[in-house]
Image (cartoon, rainbow, N blue to C red):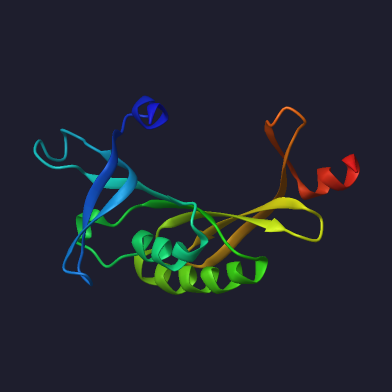
Length: 164
């Protein structure tokens, strides 16, 4: 929240935006709005960021749909971030296809971060994708573990191979 404010945005937690498909508003976990008095004294210039996070894997489609809902033009975010648990690596492919399809219309910059348990290595994996309306631009993968004191740490996959 503080980062958005330091960058000059008006930051709101559980802000609302209209969802035309549902005929009602839905909350955004985090929203950064840009206000510019040179453009309009009463209204925000644009929605800079819409972030959703979800810890229940069964709500993965719902989370994507919230980020890419059909809404009024003033509520279309320039950037979206989704952070969510998924059941497996295979599930990410399906969700990314949905994002690519919906983002062809919305045309946001997308950062999507998935987290799941790898039962083979007994670690948690984190996959992050940078996506535009043209497709996936970059993918980074990391391993998340807990140390003996219960603190989480994470390293990129290529670093994990060297550590092991």
